[in-house]
Amino acid sequence: MCDAAGGGGGCGADTDPPRRHRAPADRCESGPASEWTPGAAPGTPRHPRTCMKCGQGTAALVIRVGDPFCRGCFREYFVHKFRAMLGKNRVIFPGEKVLLAVSGGPASSAMVRQVQEGLSREAAKRLRFVPGLVYVEEGAVRRQSPEQREQTLAQMETLLQATGFPYHLIHLEEALELPPSILQPGPERAGTSGTSGPSYKEAVDSFIQQQRQDGDSGTSLPGHSAPDTPAGPPATPRLPDAAQTQELLRCFEAAATATAREELLEMLRTHLIVQTARDRGYAKVMMGESLTRVAVKLLTNLSLGRGAFLAVDTGFTDRRHGDVMVVRPMRDYTAKEIAFYNFFFGVPSVVVPPLFTKRREKPSIHQLVERFLLGLQEEFPSTISTVYRTGEKLSPEPAKASSESQRCLLCLCGLDTYGEEELALEPTLILEEPAAGVESKAAYIPLLCYSCRLTFKELGPLDTLPPYVRAEGQRRIRRAEMEQNQEPSES
Image 1 (cartoon, helix red, strand yellow):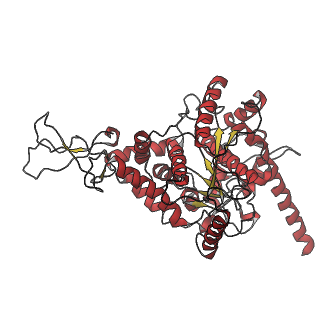
Image 2 (tube, helix red, strand yellow):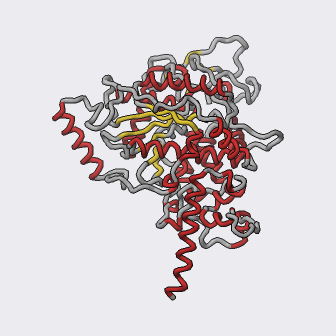
Protein backbone atom coordinates (compact mmCIF):
# COMPACT_ATOMS: atom_id res chain seq x y z
CA MET A 1 0.00 0.00 0.00
CA CYS A 2 2.96 2.36 0.57
CA ASP A 3 5.65 2.66 -2.03
CA ALA A 4 8.89 1.59 -0.46
CA ALA A 5 11.83 -0.65 -1.22
CA GLY A 6 10.29 -4.00 -1.79
CA GLY A 7 10.97 -7.35 -3.35
CA GLY A 8 9.28 -9.38 -6.02
CA GLY A 9 10.35 -10.06 -9.61
CA GLY A 10 14.10 -10.40 -9.16
CA CYS A 11 16.87 -7.80 -9.25
CA GLY A 12 17.02 -6.73 -12.86
CA ALA A 13 17.91 -10.10 -14.34
CA ASP A 14 15.34 -9.75 -17.12
CA THR A 15 15.28 -7.23 -19.96
CA ASP A 16 11.82 -5.78 -19.23
CA PRO A 17 11.59 -2.06 -18.41
CA PRO A 18 12.06 -1.28 -14.75
CA ARG A 19 8.82 -1.25 -12.77
CA ARG A 20 7.84 0.29 -9.46
CA HIS A 21 7.46 -2.28 -6.74
CA ARG A 22 5.01 -2.14 -3.87
CA ALA A 23 5.82 -3.21 -0.34
CA PRO A 24 3.37 -5.14 1.83
CA ALA A 25 0.96 -3.13 3.94
CA ASP A 26 2.89 -3.78 7.14
CA ARG A 27 5.94 -1.97 5.71
CA CYS A 28 4.32 1.43 5.25
CA GLU A 29 6.57 4.33 6.17
CA SER A 30 5.64 7.73 7.48
CA GLY A 31 8.77 9.41 6.12
CA PRO A 32 9.12 11.02 2.68
CA ALA A 33 7.74 8.76 -0.04
CA SER A 34 10.32 7.84 -2.67
CA GLU A 35 10.90 5.75 -5.76
CA TRP A 36 13.35 2.88 -6.13
CA THR A 37 14.37 1.29 -9.39
CA PRO A 38 14.87 -2.50 -9.36
CA GLY A 39 18.40 -3.38 -10.40
CA ALA A 40 20.00 -0.40 -8.70
CA ALA A 41 23.06 -1.11 -6.58
CA PRO A 42 22.50 -1.50 -2.86
CA GLY A 43 22.85 1.78 -1.04
CA THR A 44 21.79 3.85 -4.04
CA PRO A 45 19.89 6.91 -2.70
CA ARG A 46 16.18 7.07 -3.49
CA HIS A 47 14.58 9.97 -5.32
CA PRO A 48 11.88 11.71 -3.26
CA ARG A 49 8.50 11.70 -4.92
CA THR A 50 6.53 14.88 -5.58
CA CYS A 51 3.02 15.47 -4.29
CA MET A 52 0.48 14.60 -6.97
CA LYS A 53 -1.83 17.47 -5.99
CA CYS A 54 0.33 20.56 -5.58
CA GLY A 55 3.26 19.27 -7.65
CA GLN A 56 5.74 21.09 -5.39
CA GLY A 57 5.92 19.55 -1.94
CA THR A 58 7.79 16.36 -1.15
CA ALA A 59 5.38 13.46 -0.69
CA ALA A 60 5.10 12.29 2.91
CA LEU A 61 3.01 9.19 2.16
CA VAL A 62 1.44 7.22 -0.66
CA ILE A 63 -2.25 6.54 -0.09
CA ARG A 64 -2.64 4.24 -3.05
CA VAL A 65 -0.26 3.18 -5.79
CA GLY A 66 0.60 6.32 -7.72
CA ASP A 67 -1.08 8.71 -5.22
CA PRO A 68 1.70 10.47 -3.25
CA PHE A 69 0.65 13.36 -0.99
CA CYS A 70 2.55 15.94 0.99
CA ARG A 71 1.29 16.64 4.51
CA GLY A 72 -0.61 19.79 3.62
CA CYS A 73 -2.43 18.29 0.65
CA PHE A 74 -3.16 15.11 2.57
CA ARG A 75 -4.83 17.17 5.29
CA GLU A 76 -6.95 19.02 2.71
CA TYR A 77 -7.87 15.69 1.11
CA PHE A 78 -8.85 14.18 4.45
CA VAL A 79 -10.96 17.17 5.52
CA HIS A 80 -12.67 17.47 2.13
CA LYS A 81 -13.68 13.81 2.15
CA PHE A 82 -15.45 14.22 5.50
CA ARG A 83 -17.31 17.36 4.43
CA ALA A 84 -18.23 15.81 1.08
CA MET A 85 -19.69 12.72 2.75
CA LEU A 86 -21.98 14.85 4.93
CA GLY A 87 -22.87 17.26 2.12
CA LYS A 88 -23.68 14.53 -0.37
CA ASN A 89 -26.10 12.66 1.88
CA ARG A 90 -27.85 15.69 3.45
CA VAL A 91 -29.25 13.92 6.48
CA ILE A 92 -27.84 16.20 9.21
CA PHE A 93 -29.85 19.41 9.32
CA PRO A 94 -28.51 22.76 10.56
CA GLY A 95 -29.06 23.17 14.28
CA GLU A 96 -29.64 19.46 14.94
CA LYS A 97 -28.12 17.83 17.98
CA VAL A 98 -25.74 15.06 16.91
CA LEU A 99 -24.21 12.55 19.33
CA LEU A 100 -20.70 11.35 18.44
CA ALA A 101 -19.99 7.82 19.71
CA VAL A 102 -16.35 7.81 20.82
CA SER A 103 -14.53 4.59 21.62
CA GLY A 104 -11.07 6.14 22.00
CA GLY A 105 -9.86 4.31 18.90
CA PRO A 106 -8.20 5.92 15.86
CA ALA A 107 -11.33 6.24 13.69
CA SER A 108 -13.65 7.81 16.26
CA SER A 109 -10.86 10.12 17.47
CA ALA A 110 -10.25 11.32 13.92
CA MET A 111 -14.02 11.84 13.51
CA VAL A 112 -14.10 14.09 16.58
CA ARG A 113 -11.17 16.10 15.23
CA GLN A 114 -13.00 16.63 11.93
CA VAL A 115 -16.05 17.93 13.76
CA GLN A 116 -13.88 20.20 15.90
CA GLU A 117 -12.24 21.73 12.84
CA GLY A 118 -15.54 21.97 10.98
CA LEU A 119 -17.07 24.02 13.80
CA SER A 120 -14.12 26.37 14.20
CA ARG A 121 -14.42 29.96 13.04
CA GLU A 122 -11.49 29.49 10.65
CA ALA A 123 -13.27 26.78 8.64
CA ALA A 124 -14.23 27.82 5.09
CA LYS A 125 -17.50 25.87 5.13
CA ARG A 126 -18.52 25.45 8.73
CA LEU A 127 -20.57 22.57 10.04
CA ARG A 128 -23.93 23.71 11.42
CA PHE A 129 -25.00 21.02 13.88
CA VAL A 130 -24.66 20.92 17.68
CA PRO A 131 -22.37 18.04 18.74
CA GLY A 132 -22.18 15.99 21.90
CA LEU A 133 -19.97 13.03 22.83
CA VAL A 134 -20.69 9.68 24.43
CA TYR A 135 -18.25 7.04 25.64
CA VAL A 136 -19.30 3.54 26.70
CA GLU A 137 -16.89 2.08 29.25
CA GLU A 138 -16.55 -1.70 28.70
CA GLY A 139 -13.71 -2.59 31.04
CA ALA A 140 -15.69 -5.25 32.93
CA VAL A 141 -16.06 -7.55 29.90
CA ARG A 142 -12.51 -6.78 28.76
CA ARG A 143 -11.09 -8.20 32.00
CA GLN A 144 -9.71 -4.91 33.28
CA SER A 145 -9.15 -4.47 37.00
CA PRO A 146 -10.96 -1.63 38.80
CA GLU A 147 -7.71 0.34 38.81
CA GLN A 148 -7.28 -0.14 35.06
CA ARG A 149 -10.88 0.88 34.44
CA GLU A 150 -10.40 4.04 36.49
CA GLN A 151 -7.25 4.85 34.54
CA THR A 152 -8.99 4.36 31.17
CA LEU A 153 -11.92 6.51 32.33
CA ALA A 154 -9.55 9.28 33.41
CA GLN A 155 -7.77 9.20 30.04
CA MET A 156 -11.04 9.31 28.11
CA GLU A 157 -12.46 12.10 30.26
CA THR A 158 -9.35 14.17 29.63
CA LEU A 159 -9.74 13.70 25.87
CA LEU A 160 -13.47 14.47 25.93
CA GLN A 161 -13.04 17.58 28.07
CA ALA A 162 -10.36 18.89 25.71
CA THR A 163 -12.88 19.02 22.85
CA GLY A 164 -15.10 21.54 24.63
CA PHE A 165 -18.23 19.57 23.67
CA PRO A 166 -20.86 18.23 26.09
CA TYR A 167 -20.01 14.62 26.90
CA HIS A 168 -21.54 11.62 28.63
CA LEU A 169 -19.66 8.74 30.26
CA ILE A 170 -21.71 5.59 30.62
CA HIS A 171 -20.85 2.06 31.72
CA LEU A 172 -21.81 -1.14 29.95
CA GLU A 173 -23.42 -2.31 33.20
CA GLU A 174 -26.12 0.34 32.66
CA ALA A 175 -27.46 -1.78 29.79
CA LEU A 176 -28.99 -4.07 32.43
CA GLU A 177 -31.28 -1.17 33.40
CA LEU A 178 -32.40 -0.18 29.91
CA PRO A 179 -36.17 0.09 29.37
CA PRO A 180 -37.88 -2.45 27.08
CA SER A 181 -38.85 0.46 24.79
CA ILE A 182 -35.31 0.46 23.39
CA LEU A 183 -36.37 -2.62 21.40
CA GLN A 184 -39.14 -0.59 19.75
CA PRO A 185 -38.49 2.01 17.04
CA GLY A 186 -39.47 5.50 18.11
CA PRO A 187 -41.66 7.84 16.02
CA GLU A 188 -39.68 9.35 13.15
CA ARG A 189 -38.89 13.01 13.49
CA ALA A 190 -40.36 15.49 11.03
CA GLY A 191 -38.27 16.11 7.94
CA THR A 192 -36.10 12.99 8.20
CA SER A 193 -38.00 10.69 5.89
CA GLY A 194 -35.68 11.37 2.97
CA THR A 195 -32.02 12.14 2.43
CA SER A 196 -32.72 15.34 0.47
CA GLY A 197 -35.58 17.46 -0.78
CA PRO A 198 -37.54 20.54 0.27
CA SER A 199 -37.34 19.68 3.99
CA TYR A 200 -33.55 19.96 4.00
CA LYS A 201 -33.57 23.16 1.95
CA GLU A 202 -36.20 24.71 4.19
CA ALA A 203 -34.14 23.83 7.25
CA VAL A 204 -31.07 25.52 5.74
CA ASP A 205 -33.02 28.66 4.80
CA SER A 206 -34.63 28.83 8.22
CA PHE A 207 -31.27 28.43 9.94
CA ILE A 208 -29.67 31.20 7.88
CA GLN A 209 -32.60 33.51 8.57
CA GLN A 210 -32.42 32.79 12.31
CA GLN A 211 -28.69 33.34 12.20
CA ARG A 212 -29.11 36.77 10.67
CA GLN A 213 -31.78 37.77 13.15
CA ASP A 214 -29.74 36.76 16.17
CA GLY A 215 -26.50 38.13 14.76
CA ASP A 216 -24.89 34.89 15.89
CA SER A 217 -22.18 32.96 14.13
CA GLY A 218 -24.30 29.81 13.95
CA THR A 219 -22.54 27.61 16.46
CA SER A 220 -25.51 27.57 18.83
CA LEU A 221 -29.27 27.79 18.73
CA PRO A 222 -31.90 28.70 21.28
CA GLY A 223 -32.70 25.68 23.41
CA HIS A 224 -29.43 23.90 22.59
CA SER A 225 -26.29 23.71 24.66
CA ALA A 226 -23.38 25.46 23.03
CA PRO A 227 -20.53 23.17 21.98
CA ASP A 228 -17.96 25.35 23.77
CA THR A 229 -19.54 24.77 27.18
CA PRO A 230 -18.66 21.21 28.24
CA ALA A 231 -21.16 19.30 30.31
CA GLY A 232 -19.79 16.62 32.57
CA PRO A 233 -21.33 13.21 33.22
CA PRO A 234 -24.11 12.83 35.77
CA ALA A 235 -23.17 12.69 39.43
CA THR A 236 -22.79 8.92 39.78
CA PRO A 237 -20.00 6.74 41.18
CA ARG A 238 -17.00 6.34 38.90
CA LEU A 239 -17.56 2.60 38.63
CA PRO A 240 -20.81 0.63 38.97
CA ASP A 241 -21.57 -1.54 41.97
CA ALA A 242 -19.79 -4.89 42.14
CA ALA A 243 -23.17 -6.65 41.99
CA GLN A 244 -23.98 -5.02 38.65
CA THR A 245 -20.58 -5.95 37.28
CA GLN A 246 -21.02 -9.57 38.35
CA GLU A 247 -24.46 -9.69 36.73
CA LEU A 248 -23.01 -8.39 33.47
CA LEU A 249 -20.13 -10.88 33.57
CA ARG A 250 -22.61 -13.69 34.25
CA CYS A 251 -24.47 -12.69 31.10
CA PHE A 252 -21.28 -12.82 28.98
CA GLU A 253 -19.82 -15.95 30.57
CA ALA A 254 -23.03 -17.84 29.84
CA ALA A 255 -22.51 -17.31 26.10
CA ALA A 256 -21.24 -20.50 24.51
CA THR A 257 -18.95 -18.98 21.86
CA ALA A 258 -16.74 -15.94 21.31
CA THR A 259 -18.92 -14.99 18.35
CA ALA A 260 -22.02 -14.80 20.55
CA ARG A 261 -20.17 -12.57 23.05
CA GLU A 262 -19.06 -10.23 20.25
CA GLU A 263 -22.65 -9.94 19.03
CA LEU A 264 -23.97 -9.42 22.57
CA LEU A 265 -21.44 -6.65 23.21
CA GLU A 266 -22.34 -4.92 19.94
CA MET A 267 -26.05 -5.08 20.78
CA LEU A 268 -25.68 -3.72 24.32
CA ARG A 269 -23.35 -0.93 23.20
CA THR A 270 -25.69 0.17 20.38
CA HIS A 271 -28.75 0.12 22.62
CA LEU A 272 -26.96 2.19 25.28
CA ILE A 273 -25.89 4.81 22.75
CA VAL A 274 -29.34 5.05 21.16
CA GLN A 275 -31.03 5.34 24.57
CA THR A 276 -28.59 8.10 25.55
CA ALA A 277 -29.45 9.94 22.34
CA ARG A 278 -33.18 9.63 23.10
CA ASP A 279 -32.83 10.79 26.70
CA ARG A 280 -30.66 13.78 25.76
CA GLY A 281 -32.63 14.87 22.70
CA TYR A 282 -30.13 13.96 19.97
CA ALA A 283 -31.61 13.30 16.53
CA LYS A 284 -28.54 11.64 14.99
CA VAL A 285 -25.70 9.41 16.19
CA MET A 286 -22.32 9.39 14.44
CA MET A 287 -20.36 6.15 14.50
CA GLY A 288 -16.65 6.11 13.68
CA GLU A 289 -16.56 2.99 11.49
CA SER A 290 -13.84 3.18 8.84
CA LEU A 291 -13.87 1.69 5.35
CA THR A 292 -11.73 -1.19 6.62
CA ARG A 293 -14.10 -1.85 9.52
CA VAL A 294 -17.14 -1.67 7.23
CA ALA A 295 -15.59 -4.22 4.84
CA VAL A 296 -14.82 -6.60 7.72
CA LYS A 297 -18.31 -6.11 9.13
CA LEU A 298 -19.90 -6.77 5.75
CA LEU A 299 -18.25 -10.18 5.34
CA THR A 300 -18.73 -11.00 9.03
CA ASN A 301 -22.46 -10.32 8.92
CA LEU A 302 -22.74 -12.26 5.70
CA SER A 303 -21.14 -15.23 7.49
CA LEU A 304 -23.58 -14.78 10.38
CA GLY A 305 -26.64 -15.00 8.13
CA ARG A 306 -27.40 -11.26 8.00
CA GLY A 307 -27.17 -10.95 4.22
CA ALA A 308 -30.61 -9.32 3.99
CA PHE A 309 -29.57 -6.53 6.39
CA LEU A 310 -26.11 -5.63 5.11
CA ALA A 311 -27.28 -2.28 3.72
CA VAL A 312 -28.43 -1.00 7.13
CA ASP A 313 -25.61 -2.68 9.06
CA THR A 314 -22.86 -1.09 6.92
CA GLY A 315 -24.49 1.77 4.98
CA PHE A 316 -24.12 5.50 5.63
CA THR A 317 -27.53 5.72 7.29
CA ASP A 318 -29.32 3.30 9.61
CA ARG A 319 -32.96 4.25 10.28
CA ARG A 320 -34.13 1.13 12.10
CA HIS A 321 -34.51 2.96 15.45
CA GLY A 322 -37.00 5.46 14.04
CA ASP A 323 -36.45 8.64 16.05
CA VAL A 324 -32.65 8.27 16.18
CA MET A 325 -30.72 7.86 12.94
CA VAL A 326 -27.25 6.31 12.95
CA VAL A 327 -24.77 7.71 10.40
CA ARG A 328 -21.26 6.55 9.50
CA PRO A 329 -19.30 9.53 8.11
CA MET A 330 -15.90 7.78 8.37
CA ARG A 331 -16.79 4.87 6.11
CA ASP A 332 -14.82 6.28 3.16
CA TYR A 333 -11.52 6.32 5.05
CA THR A 334 -9.22 3.32 5.12
CA ALA A 335 -7.51 2.37 8.38
CA LYS A 336 -4.22 3.44 6.80
CA GLU A 337 -5.46 6.95 5.98
CA ILE A 338 -6.78 7.39 9.52
CA ALA A 339 -3.55 6.12 11.07
CA PHE A 340 -1.42 8.53 9.04
CA TYR A 341 -3.74 11.48 9.75
CA ASN A 342 -3.64 10.83 13.49
CA PHE A 343 0.15 10.44 13.41
CA PHE A 344 0.84 13.54 11.34
CA PHE A 345 -1.53 15.86 13.19
CA GLY A 346 -1.28 14.55 16.74
CA VAL A 347 -4.75 13.11 17.24
CA PRO A 348 -4.71 11.24 20.58
CA SER A 349 -6.37 7.88 21.13
CA VAL A 350 -6.82 5.38 23.96
CA VAL A 351 -6.05 1.68 23.57
CA VAL A 352 -8.30 -0.86 25.32
CA PRO A 353 -7.80 -4.65 25.51
CA PRO A 354 -9.93 -6.99 23.37
CA LEU A 355 -12.97 -8.89 24.58
CA PHE A 356 -12.02 -11.81 26.82
CA THR A 357 -12.03 -15.37 25.50
CA LYS A 358 -12.24 -18.67 27.33
CA ARG A 359 -9.29 -21.01 27.48
CA ARG A 360 -8.77 -23.16 24.35
CA GLU A 361 -11.68 -21.41 22.69
CA LYS A 362 -11.74 -20.93 18.94
CA PRO A 363 -11.55 -17.32 17.74
CA SER A 364 -14.78 -15.58 16.83
CA ILE A 365 -16.04 -15.25 13.28
CA HIS A 366 -15.30 -11.52 13.59
CA GLN A 367 -11.62 -12.22 14.27
CA LEU A 368 -11.32 -14.83 11.54
CA VAL A 369 -12.83 -12.55 8.89
CA GLU A 370 -10.61 -9.65 9.94
CA ARG A 371 -7.45 -11.76 9.73
CA PHE A 372 -8.54 -13.15 6.38
CA LEU A 373 -9.25 -9.74 4.84
CA LEU A 374 -6.15 -8.03 6.19
CA GLY A 375 -4.02 -10.96 5.02
CA LEU A 376 -5.43 -10.66 1.51
CA GLN A 377 -4.96 -6.90 1.61
CA GLU A 378 -1.20 -7.32 2.04
CA GLU A 379 -0.92 -9.22 -1.24
CA PHE A 380 -3.83 -7.63 -3.12
CA PRO A 381 -4.19 -3.97 -2.06
CA SER A 382 -7.62 -3.53 -3.66
CA THR A 383 -9.26 -6.30 -1.60
CA ILE A 384 -10.89 -4.17 1.10
CA SER A 385 -12.03 -1.43 -1.27
CA THR A 386 -13.60 -4.05 -3.57
CA VAL A 387 -15.56 -5.59 -0.69
CA TYR A 388 -16.63 -2.10 0.40
CA ARG A 389 -17.87 -1.14 -3.09
CA THR A 390 -19.87 -4.36 -3.28
CA GLY A 391 -21.79 -3.33 -0.18
CA GLU A 392 -22.66 0.01 -1.82
CA LYS A 393 -24.91 -1.80 -4.31
CA LEU A 394 -27.19 -3.32 -1.68
CA SER A 395 -30.70 -2.08 -0.89
CA PRO A 396 -32.02 -1.45 2.64
CA GLU A 397 -35.56 -2.50 1.68
CA PRO A 398 -35.33 -6.12 2.99
CA ALA A 399 -34.54 -4.78 6.47
CA LYS A 400 -37.78 -2.79 6.78
CA ALA A 401 -40.62 -4.20 8.89
CA SER A 402 -44.24 -3.19 8.33
CA SER A 403 -45.46 -4.25 11.77
CA GLU A 404 -44.21 -5.37 15.17
CA SER A 405 -44.95 -9.02 14.43
CA GLN A 406 -42.56 -8.83 11.45
CA ARG A 407 -39.73 -7.11 13.35
CA CYS A 408 -36.83 -8.94 14.99
CA LEU A 409 -36.79 -8.61 18.77
CA LEU A 410 -33.04 -7.97 19.01
CA CYS A 411 -31.84 -6.19 15.85
CA LEU A 412 -35.15 -4.45 14.92
CA CYS A 413 -34.84 -5.52 11.27
CA GLY A 414 -37.59 -7.25 9.32
CA LEU A 415 -37.93 -10.99 9.87
CA ASP A 416 -36.33 -12.91 7.02
CA THR A 417 -37.74 -16.32 7.99
CA TYR A 418 -41.12 -16.10 6.26
CA GLY A 419 -41.37 -18.40 3.26
CA GLU A 420 -38.22 -20.32 4.12
CA GLU A 421 -38.14 -24.09 3.86
CA GLU A 422 -38.42 -25.93 7.15
CA LEU A 423 -35.09 -27.65 6.53
CA ALA A 424 -33.31 -24.29 6.13
CA LEU A 425 -34.60 -23.06 9.50
CA GLU A 426 -33.79 -26.28 11.38
CA PRO A 427 -30.39 -25.02 12.68
CA THR A 428 -32.18 -22.10 14.36
CA LEU A 429 -34.64 -24.19 16.36
CA ILE A 430 -34.30 -24.97 20.07
CA LEU A 431 -35.45 -28.44 21.06
CA GLU A 432 -36.40 -28.49 24.72
CA GLU A 433 -39.24 -29.66 26.91
CA PRO A 434 -39.62 -27.15 29.75
CA ALA A 435 -41.48 -28.10 32.88
CA ALA A 436 -45.01 -26.83 33.41
CA GLY A 437 -45.09 -23.16 34.34
CA VAL A 438 -41.43 -22.63 33.40
CA GLU A 439 -40.57 -20.03 30.77
CA SER A 440 -39.33 -21.59 27.55
CA LYS A 441 -36.39 -20.24 25.59
CA ALA A 442 -37.87 -21.78 22.45
CA ALA A 443 -40.83 -19.39 22.71
CA TYR A 444 -38.52 -16.49 21.78
CA ILE A 445 -37.34 -18.07 18.50
CA PRO A 446 -40.32 -16.94 16.34
CA LEU A 447 -39.60 -13.35 17.39
CA LEU A 448 -36.09 -13.39 15.89
CA CYS A 449 -34.54 -13.16 12.44
CA TYR A 450 -32.35 -15.98 11.13
CA SER A 451 -29.05 -14.51 12.36
CA CYS A 452 -30.35 -13.49 15.79
CA ARG A 453 -31.79 -17.00 16.24
CA LEU A 454 -28.32 -18.49 15.85
CA THR A 455 -26.88 -15.99 18.31
CA PHE A 456 -29.75 -16.39 20.77
CA LYS A 457 -29.19 -20.16 20.93
CA GLU A 458 -25.65 -19.54 22.20
CA LEU A 459 -26.48 -16.87 24.80
CA GLY A 460 -27.24 -19.24 27.66
CA PRO A 461 -30.30 -19.63 29.92
CA LEU A 462 -33.05 -17.04 29.98
CA ASP A 463 -32.15 -15.80 33.45
CA THR A 464 -28.74 -14.65 32.11
CA LEU A 465 -30.27 -12.44 29.40
CA PRO A 466 -30.48 -8.66 29.89
CA PRO A 467 -33.75 -7.88 31.76
CA TYR A 468 -35.07 -5.52 29.08
CA VAL A 469 -34.77 -8.25 26.42
CA ARG A 470 -36.77 -10.69 28.53
CA ALA A 471 -39.40 -8.08 29.39
CA GLU A 472 -40.00 -7.07 25.78
CA GLY A 473 -39.94 -10.70 24.62
CA GLN A 474 -42.53 -11.70 27.22
CA ARG A 475 -44.77 -8.80 26.20
CA ARG A 476 -44.67 -9.80 22.55
CA ILE A 477 -45.24 -13.47 23.35
CA ARG A 478 -48.32 -12.61 25.42
CA ARG A 479 -49.62 -10.35 22.68
CA ALA A 480 -49.17 -13.08 20.07
CA GLU A 481 -51.04 -15.54 22.29
CA MET A 482 -53.91 -13.08 22.76
CA GLU A 483 -54.20 -12.56 19.01
CA GLN A 484 -54.26 -16.32 18.43
CA ASN A 485 -57.00 -16.74 21.01
CA GLN A 486 -59.10 -14.02 19.42
CA GLU A 487 -59.00 -15.61 15.96
CA PRO A 488 -61.15 -18.70 16.81
CA SER A 489 -63.76 -16.56 18.63
CA GLU A 490 -64.09 -14.22 15.62
CA SER A 491 -64.43 -17.11 13.19
